[in-house]
Image (tube, rainbow, N blue to C red; front, side, top):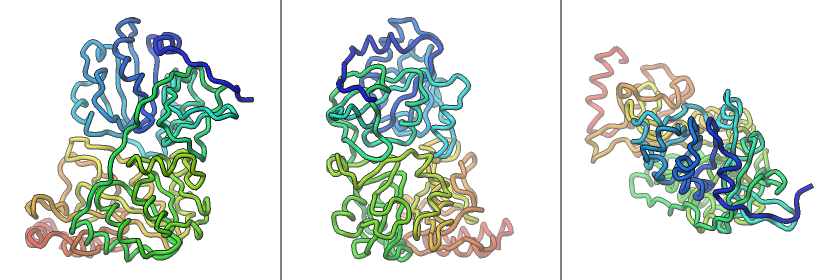
Length: 432
């Protein structure tokens, strides 16, 4: 039975009672990132003379002082499962590392690590009268890791929305609660222009009434959201719930009436967007957050009605190899759920998997459709799994096509200024 009331502890008490030398600490990600932990971690490491610590997380919202403090870095290894602009450059210090893995694997790989999990430290909503808090807008790995950790610390934050799905945590499951009221990380929707709108018009043609959607973040997904305003009875099964989905629901486009899994529910593993989105999700049973091990399981994705997955990329080669996570050897982000959602959608009856990308950068001078990926580029979606690629110049349906057919299709959707060079190179290496 859940406890009926909550007792708050001091931050220093929680640090000293849960962490020792050789500890492995897992933190919540994105909007669940614990500010109290990261603000005071360096001070506590030095004050307690801790050695050989490991901190695991994802999507850091900022370059916290503990990420760069030389004295702390001697004793702490930081591991991230998805990189952001705040920490990309820190990989060169030898104490900040990225783990390549699909999003659905995050929790399992953390839990099964040789040292286990000493502490899970995250954030939560205010407790309810029944003796439960919720993990708010994040459940990629948080609920599963929390229950596998030896100690649990949650920072109670009045700004964290109460949510539904698998986010509820009993007060009895938590060792320490810290009061820490701070606005959570938010971003306004990226505005889109003519190029993104052209891409969205092609994508819209693959989405029929009653389809279930997985969309990412950025200008292209936002443009696609705007292009779908006249559709009917769309559903949401996505790793990330965003502002575009909220707007489509408010416009009556998203009803979930045709969904086979969680009908009439918007289902995701986390949400990231504006404060308006967070207010919409707060205490709204329409939206459910389940672990990424569930949401991003390709076979479960494939059970959805007319599943359509949309991802973007950094560059794509002429045979359909997709790089969405690096520029050559330089890691930018991570694979996340790109491969899982792309493969899962193709398992759905009537489903489609789309990679949408602007054909070029810098006014057509740098092609994103390339003969070969840059040396060191990470293949996020293999050519064996690719379905369809879309740019502002058209559609390349690659699934089941020969190499030569793929090459011709990809050149046709490249920027016009790059097509002759791509054709020349393709002939030189024997593709054509």
